[in-house]
Length: 163
Image (cartoon, rainbow, N blue to C red; front, side, top):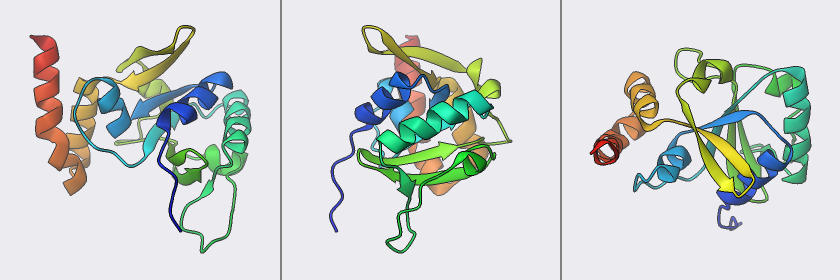
């Protein structure tokens, strides 16, 4: 079955509309900061407090989010799963979304805030994105082949921005 083209902007619009507290990490965050990289999913680290989880569940319902790779079964994430520090690998009507409780050395939403920047999504809507410098540090720590492969591009983009 063919997947529709990913519409990460739509996912971000819905999360923003529902006032979900999150930081974009990964490829989409790099692209939003000018890095010429390809990415296949949107990665976010969300605040795991009860109110935010409730808003996140509502937003995910609008996006028809369900777990990827469940043998054709459509299983939606609930508050219990979203409250954990683990990774929820989801498919939405607008494309793949990885909802992460933490990244790296158990860095959660509050731990990432100081290393994030605010970017305008629209005239009255903003999203938080992990800064390029912090994303580079994270990818160096993770050390996975896919992370190491983009480091040169991220470093070059950061150097260009700092000129």
